[in-house]
Amino acid sequence: MTFETTLQQTFKDDPDKDYINPCCIGGDEILNGLKSNLAVRMNIESDSIEIYQEDWGWALEFLKEEIIYLLAVSNETETGDKQSHIIFNAQAFRKVKGIFFSKTVELPEEGRDFSTIVSQIAAENGFMVN
Image (cartoon, rainbow, N blue to C red; front, side, top):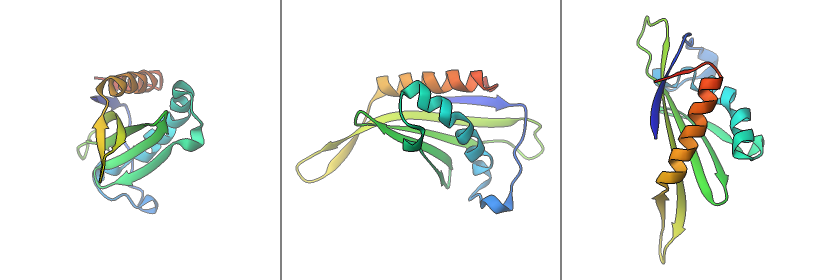
């Protein structure tokens, strides 16, 4: 489930952080800020949550009860904006073993529930959810 938020701040392109693309700027800060609240709401250990950078933004991922939860964050802010426009995409899926190969099966209901939790946490942390 995808939703957008607006932050009343912008993020600086810090050369020490080695952002791959402009859409990655600040995504690590956003996910690290949500991580502890998300661990509490999902009833998991904070250490079980992995945060990593991709060429399209940042991802937060964890496994709970054999379901993989993935939260993708992309910064879509235009140069000169005084606000940050952030796109969140929350997904849930399961790996199913086949005879020869495993396949990924999306779990829409769990994805919607996860998206609701993420948007509630975002709103509680000052994001204006659109």
